[in-house]
Image (cartoon, rainbow, N blue to C red; front, side, top):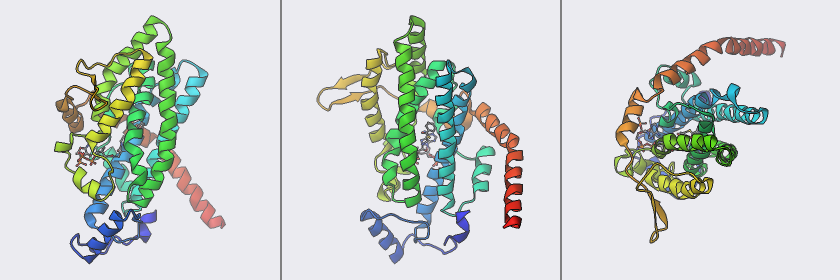
Length: 322
Ligand code: BYC
């Protein structure tokens, strides 16, 4: 919707006086807004990252949505329903932010439904028990916060502003997840075992969420220069591990990593080797649930066709009446 008014037609060479001025603005911590001049590569990088982020929020509704009807109490059901709804909302803010760069909502949706678009690797794993819902809130939303708080200072205005509200809501999601874990860990032996099993299955995929190691991250250098990213993948992964390990120990849980140990000299938790072959397999479409998630998304889109038609018919009626 915003895209019609944007200056996306102008050829924007990345080597020009404009490019120098652009980088000077970034270096000076000024925000870039939709109608400002920007290098094509900056625009493409943002469209790629914001759309992948939006798709992740939308697909991220599925593993948890799966448990709404099976939540153990009315209170848990209401909280989970609200959380999943928030994620849908995050997807919508982010699609709107991507639209300000000149890409259409229809194209973005088509990319996701056709299987051409990437979304976070984490959402290709199954949710096998109620403890998985606690673990997703605690770890997946916890990882999301670590990655997304710096995005509130991203150089592109619409993305940075969208992230402020997203982060506030993610913070609530993380707490509801941790509270589920706390309840399970203070419960029966079976409940605590369920929490441990969920941690065992989700820990490594959560570490992968931060993306490939810095040595293999093809976009990090440029994105850091443009202040889209403020920290590298490895730096954020380490911050997440340092924040999360004491939380797990407080729950009385064990991390599935025999190499995990506190390095007294640096104060950081050192962790074992991540299985990057698994990450690459998930990205190639061969994770445990890739096909199922895409099918569920396509079905939801098809089932929602009548809502879109009704909304358009209603908008047309309103225009005639006005
Ligand atoms: N999964 O050069 P790199 C959420 C791709 S939503 C899949 O380091 P970049 C939540 C990457 O796209 C979670 N692909 O890339 C929702 C690139 O491929 P292309 C999503 C991944 O962009 C609901 C290639 O690997 N969060 O948290 O500099 C409920 C090389 O990587 C992944 C965001 O999207 C992955 N995990 O850094 C709860 C946040 N990692 O495009 C929670 C915004 C990397 O060249 N995004 N790839 O084909 C970012 O911060 C950055 O895009 C990333 C990757 C850190 C993810």
